[in-house]
Image (cartoon, rainbow over all chains, first blue to last red; front, side, top):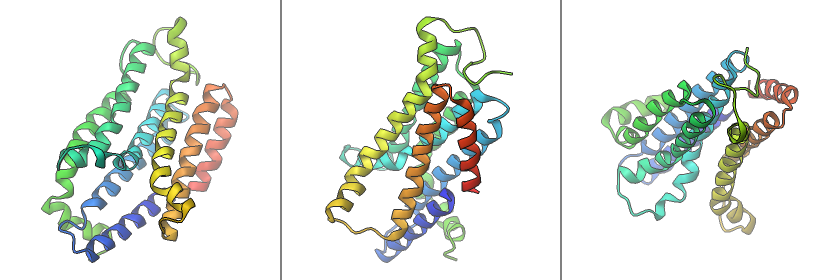
Length: 151
Length: 99
């Protein structure tokens, strides 16, 4: 249910941006699309590992929760004196700080960082820096109308 | 096979075990609190005071995402409390609901 609702909300936001004649009407939908996709992948992995590798399961659920934090943090980030693309990237980058907490936990509990933590950081951190650039790219502007049913 | 309370690797000692056993439960509470406080400012308070109007889709979207968040907090804390059987039961039932 979360995925269709998330996508539906993205469609509504695109419609609003199109009505406002925004310069990048599909920009905000990129965050919905990629954050929800990463959330879905993490949760799918968590379900798969629930009966196989419990330490992978619990870290993947934690990573899924981090993927949902960006929209919440973005409601505060307007107060931060930053400009595009750092302003747009900052909510998810701040959320990624929870990966630092996880890495510290791994280090204290296991003596080394868990592979899920390493892979999640290797994917999320660089991607979250690139996300604003992708959201305003010509490729996304071309692709997004097809994904969200505007063509 | 690892038990739900154990990490792979060397056996824990003293404070390290405490930190490990409550980490996921505590962090779920922090994450949930962060989200709830944020949306109190932009959703719950405007909704309660009538200072903003929201479309039905936004209410449904919010309800489903907050339900997942509540489930995440409950599930993490069930495991931390050692109530693994209930955690699994709830996990199975919620995955049936999601489908």
